[in-house]
Length: 199
Length: 199
Image (cartoon, rainbow over all chains, first blue to last red; front, side, top):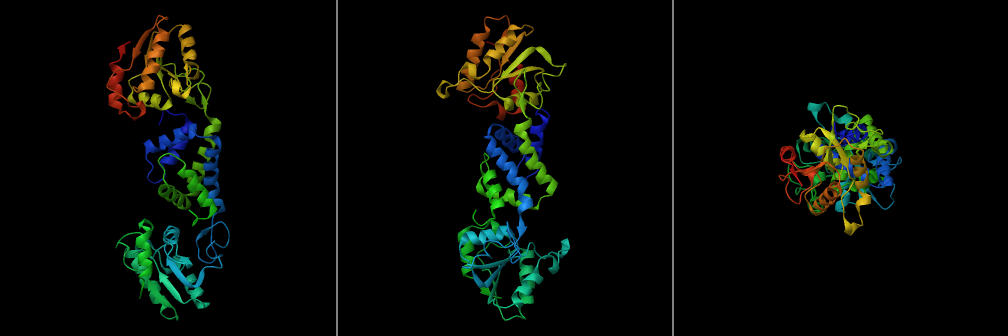
């Protein structure tokens, strides 16, 4: 590291902090940037710098969005009677990619985890319930992962929902037990979506 | 990709252009940045943005540097009678890491390659010769890679140098034939450096 000028060293250090980027890869990326076209390098810097400034949460589903309402909630073609509850943005994207769902989402931004002091108030369950209270929703699909926290959260949400007249379904098996949704292949996700069962 | 807001999509696209970063990895990195501490993200953006602005070539050896003179050329402890000729910065860093060399470098910034229209005038051979003409240099170690272009360049440089009263040496075998210096382990590089032979 000491063999590089400080401006290159800074880039290497920053890259090295990213997940899965070791020192060798960070060095290779920095050297690539030095020989890459200037606009490409500046676009990378600008897009990273702007990321946190422009991104906000959708006021309806809490997906990451450039504006107050995300593209799915703002799309009149989506089925507003079905809500799919997922842990995070990556899981939502995985389901969108499978193409098996045309309704709206509710992104919890986390899972229940008493060990980490994460309770129902921390993961937007109250917002989900008030959405159901407003009426118009016929089915809630709980599509949290099948690991311990995912199952516990699914179970808690389905308990909360029993007092409303909505069908509560859970994404079907097919998703490997203990796995995280974002790593599942699209066909498996589609099958799991189609075979969802009543809780 | 269409499932992400445009500011995230821009980051993914930019990351995806880097060598060895596929779409999945680019997505993972972008999602990581969203949850990473703000100063860390801004530091990454800033360091990349500044990279091309602050970096320049050392006036003596043409290494990448933050100022007009690199830290090796500016170091009075380095042996000024020996010059090691390398293809690029990464090769120089590899030799520095091996710790087997205490002299100065001359970075060609390329190799002879008639197919790509790269001739002697494109890779700073003239600057090397005028450095030798000024006197004070006793040995030139040619440490270009052992692939075809590296050997051709080494051969051309040693031909040019025969008219001066300097010892011309070539980095020793030990470096795998057809390989590039920057990927060689440090012990092998050290052995190769110690066993250098007269051309």
